Length: 290
Image (tube, rainbow, N blue to C red; front, top):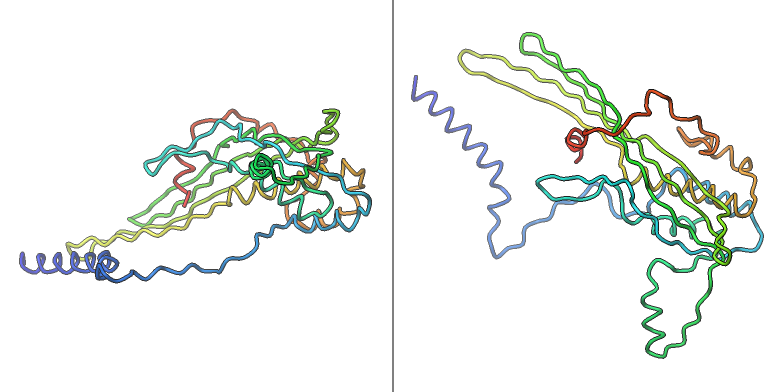
């Protein structure tokens, strides 16, 4: 009996060793074959791209010169884990706004993100002709709240199921400023909830004196930075309608066709039940980050 158990244990350990050691069996002088991803490289598109296209088809007047300044992360939230530390939201929001302006084709975009090359050329005596900006965009991503989640975990006779949900609330304020007078001529204050959930099931059974346990699960999380890209594009749409005095109703049908999207300036206030102080839910959020 003891030898039979020892044989089963040896077989199980051998299978595990083979499964985990396949990648390490490549000869040292031979390149390891790289794993291919599911898709090739492609252009980033969002449901809000059609809004920006609507701007270019609606406004046919003179284009203003616009530069993008600092759009900083002022949430104060950090992610701390064994793999390293970092911030929850992107530090390149200004680059996304600049791309949105170029995509809208409704402004003459001047580079204020990194003018070091032009400065260097000028210092070497190069013929540099600077184009001044009429307006510039600044602002911040200033709120990141972890809202109360919920879930259930239950089991009967070794068979169980679980479900858990998580939510974040992201908010930002962007401003369009007249460069020559410093007057704020447009703004956008928007927020969005980002959701995540996980579902799983487990079963444990004894077959004789051997316990067999199976644990299955699946996790979903809305991409935080993709959600921010959507928010920034919506903000550009709002500020451009302010700048050129474009009636946003001309693009209202597009807004209505984007699932879950409303004109942020007409959005209802946050319900009182969600107006909560941030609490220490970062660890739970990281559990579904992959």
